[in-house]
Image (cartoon, rainbow, N blue to C red):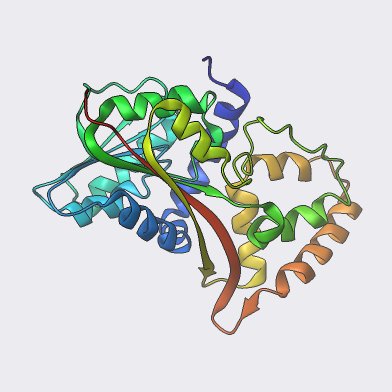
Length: 282
């Protein structure tokens, strides 16, 4: 399926900010990485694929886990993200981490290459999820697991909805269609698991991961972080007058202040971890 060029452009514009905040983003989403490691059964010495790696996570964390006898390859369709991931690997001195530009439904690897495949908050943006999962199964070794993490419902994730509830009062935002490339595309339980089954995965499973997104930031710093992470949000803000922007910022800081603690920001979060196994040949 042809890529969505609007999505590609949006993430390309955000790549410099994701690189700037890479370590903070790694910390915020570390519980998701840990869940993917557990469900995909990733261990020392394995060869692992990270699909939709962005600026290099969780691939870089996984490279440390699998050790020098293992290898991790991260792929992403955004060249700017891949370049950022390569720079991070070089700074960290990780020689067992490789990054390539590739789409999920066209992976440049031989069949039966990987011991595990993961995707952290990337599957929502696969243009054709079943085709992408089928391709992931192709490069996965028989009997091995894939694990995909996707956001559960928006209203259960104030990391998103605390902002969107304020934004919607200032900018008209029609709700996305059920199969639009949107962060909450696979929020309904069972939806992504069904795609795994259609693609041919066996023993598919789904579990709810509940954790807290922790960020050692002030309310003002967090608001800056979220603006920089999201090109979609920046475009909406650009439509506001100076007076509207001032009022929105006041309301936004008040809404976000509910999640401020003595050590920074803390947001309860719900994520679905969906996994499946590649069958052995008949």
